[in-house]
Image (cartoon, rainbow, N blue to C red; front, side, top):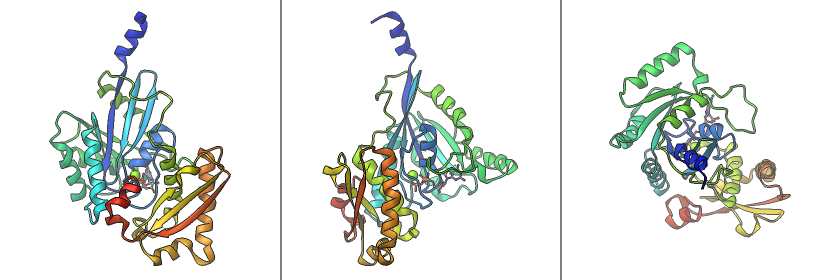
Length: 309
Ligand SMILES: Nc1nc2c(ncn2[C@@H]2O[C@H](COP(=O)(O)OP(=O)(O)OP(=O)(O)O)[C@@H](O)[C@H]2O)c(=O)[nH]1
Ligand SMILES: [Mg+2]
């Protein structure tokens, strides 16, 4: 190996950064905006992310692996317990913890619970991101920074705005993401490339395709119902032109809602999903969607495993 190559490797920074926070605070949107691609799905509902999703940021001198975790909340079913376990796992696996809290909401007991879970891990650098900074005035943002600072927990506090779904043109622009990246990079140790520099996600194609469809199912649903939805793409078909997938719900009545009057809702989901899938998978030409009832799958460990949760 020549000298210059050794020197370069010596200066290379890399590591793992977990993104934690209550549900719906903008964790997945932040990761997508940093990576510049859709790594994790986003919705207006709490509880969208159901597993740790890794997004990989590659630059000349660094590789940062972001671990987007599910929103941490009081668990009501086995699903909720699993989601919280994923958050703890994400924290343990990381060099830096980014705690997200939205600009337009006060810090509450839900936030404190999450902070407690990484507080004892003194060796980790702790960054607070005040998300959705576009939602409040500059003056209000200063007060928010003071509120977060008074917790005496964080090494850095960064207000950020992250553009939402990469497919939707929204009025807000990304703000402070480069500053955040600089802070992270300077705090990371020298290390190896964990993944190939062309990788930006660790999700396999099947899971990614299922998630794209789930995002479209969630769009029109009420909050209560969204937790009951899971999607599985038939595994032998992902490389073929015709993709087939099943939407699972927990009860017959929910099946009716997802299908809609004369199948109208399912038709819309299918159309939107196909559009999203075609953008990511060149070969996909058609999508066949079925809706099935899997009674109480949120409490069923075997089903949760089947859905990779
Ligand atoms: N105005 C504004 N909205 C945002 C911003 N970031 C996220 N959002 C919106 O907040 C909602 C929740 O975003 P997600 O990224 O799904 O939140 P999350 O924390 O990953 O949620 P869970 O996966 O449920 O824990 C979506 O409707 C986003 O479009 C932002 O910077 N500004
Ligand atoms: Mg999320």
